[in-house]
Length: 348
Image (cartoon, rainbow, N blue to C red; front, side, top):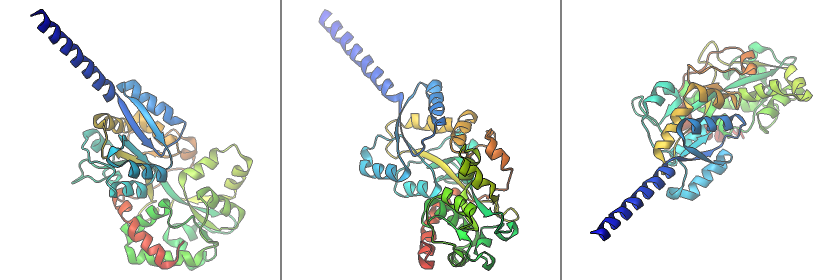
């Protein structure tokens, strides 16, 4: 009898040890993130403090993360994937890297147009947690603001030899063109793309900061850039950045029509997440007012949640504007016809 009692005790001890190990394992979140901002340290610390869940991070750019996930396949330890553009997020969804989830918190706090992969407005595969605008930057000497007040106007003959952009195939451009397809249709968007090519001041090159500096130097009359690049230069301590900003103006495009194109940084639960519950908790945490401020301000963006308040002085100085209300999922899907249009018109 004593031997049997000892055996039962030993079995109980082993069971408790196993349960403790399982609980310890559940208190971990493996995060694959294309974000790399100082405010993220506070963001992640806040989540761990609230939940006791430790975050293990893999940080790289979007392309490297997607390639890593492809190579890892079903054996990937990723729980949450964070990427920084609708086109890239849609690509990850199309390749089956996310799993659908339903969360009343996310459904109530993230606007329906900033969620993708859900049905009838419920759930989703990925969610936008911050937004950025695609603005028009113009040279104050060379260009009249009324000539470049909309995305469509950049293709008008009055702007011949003045337009600069980064590569049309870059995700930021594909997302914007995807939005135009959703609003105007493929035929009108292709005609616009032809006009853009005819109006180039130079072949597409460089990043968005290069476009702003090209406008400031006079090489370009007008260019497209994400709002956070402009905000970064506003906040920059560098004399050449301040000098460049003083020479350019910016426009919130399409204020009398559809509103300014908006893109997102966002993420979802990985397809084979070993800690799914922790992953859902993390996404819900990102939708909290506290986390929204950190998430958005890290890259001079706006919170996705209406009740969250941005305290970024550079963004506040840029003023308020009307934003478009286009489904971010549709924008992602439209990158395929967008690329075909670019190829047909020679928009490199």
